Amino acid sequence: MQHNSRHEVRGRLLPRSRRVAALSVAAGLGIAVAACGSSSSPGSSVSASNASAPAGGGATATAALKAYQAAPTKINITTPLKSAPPRGKTVVVLGTPQPQNVQIQRTIAQLAHFAHWNYALVSYDPANPATFNGAIGTALTKHANYIVEAGTPVAPAILQQVQHAGAKLAVTAVAPIAVKPPVIVNASANDSTQGNLMADYFVSDSKGKGNAVIEHVPGYAILDGFTNAFTARAKALCPGCTTTMANISLPQLASGQLIPTVISALKQHPSANYLVFDDGPFATGITSALAAAGLSKIKVIGEAVDPTGLAALRTGKEAAWTGYSSPYATLQVADAMFRDAEGLPIAQAQEGVQPTQLLTKANVGSITEWNYPSDALQQFKALWKLSGQ
Image (cartoon, rainbow, N blue to C red; front, side, top):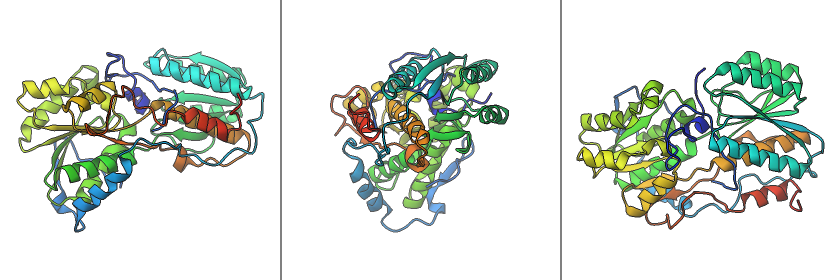
């Protein structure tokens, strides 16, 4: 099975401090919120001078950053339900032992209780595709109206099985998967906004002279949205900027070779002054590795800050990250299920993205987790007419 999930990427088998990359399925839920092009081939450089960049690209980038300085305070879903969700539906979560996945299980259980729905959990081993397929079958025997899963691609035959049984799938951060019956939503699956935002920072901060090495794991297709958007936006705005893709294979990732591979790419491109990560947890150990390699002046930036990244921003050891909340994605999943239960349309354009923030030393403050808005659950419950629950 191909592992293509953002939540596989963001919930790790290695230390919790950075939720480092391995091959696991994970997605979280608490109370949080948070240009496409093609990736370069391994080791290739792309000069933005090959693109037709508009005049004043740096000014455009700088102006675009202003909207992302403050943490978001509003959820991006605004249309209320007609009434509280109809009671008596059954939702089954396909779960793994990973900490963030356990958090998803607990939150869906909590929301099911609020809505007076039946809740069940069916566990599987993310490293064994047969157990995932078996879990789908078990969920269907429980007469599931909705099956929730995070991160594992679903084979066409399994989709047919779900549809034939009259059930529906609500997934988060899965790639590739089409949002069509029986799939009702793929929450937080679009990273292009964060790719554009980080490219704006790169162009603005470098004053049009950035040379970036971009870490990317092609095996996680969900992350292409970020890297594609970043490279396209940088080329469009910055004729003096260059990007180089450092692709990491899944075996390299699993064996702990991501950081050494990135350091090697930087040494092969001595003019590089930025290192871009397509997922915060992948940056574990990068500051010490850069220091050991005599590369401490390189600025580390990227998508989806984690607690270690926040700490590095405070000390100035890393330069900029976007905010991403796994918890928010599960609220989107619940929102889609409740809307479907009422026969309401589901806006994938809204459910597929989440609000974000540009985080730097100037505005990171003392937070240890990026969970905004802090009252996202309350805002969603108001839309669902469950605010009294």
